[in-house]
Amino acid sequence: MKGNTAIIQQLNQLLACELAAMDQYFIHSEMYANWGLTKLYERIGHEFDDEKRHAKMLIERILFLEGTPDLTRREPGIKVGSDVPEMLQFDLDVEYAVDGMLKDAMALCEREQDYVTRDMLQQLLEDTEVDHAWWLEQQLGLVSRLGLPNYLQSQM
Image 1: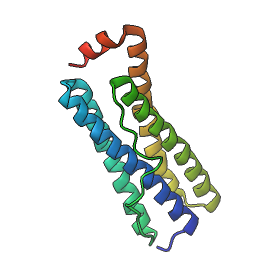
Image 2: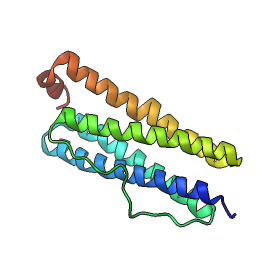
Image 3: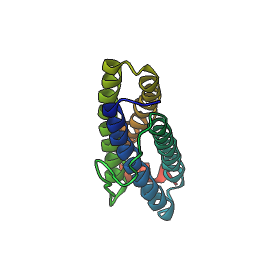
Image 4: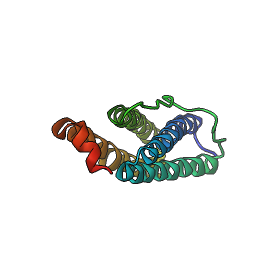
């Protein structure tokens, strides 16, 4: 099915964000594993899997719309943290960027009456807001309330 060019471009921009999030989660999860922070390793590994699933959904939809998925870009870019709070914040920043782009893409889909793509993006938005961003905000709040040493001990 020949899709709307603007929607395909927006989906490729979202794909670049999901790939950046996926790569960032991957390196952060491996860093957590290396530091012995098993709970963070497992959770961020789960986030990596979610981002991979999101990227797959976008690729499938772009192909369905007869577009070409662009797997070369990463937006807003990968930021590797040097400590746990920075890593959590960088991951949250990516989720906020994806959140905004998803809402923009959904609005475009509404204008262009591509309701199937909009519904797919709604699923990604729910993961982004209800699961990923919420959990990261919660962890940063715990670091603030418990103090970093206590938080890190709880993640071993």
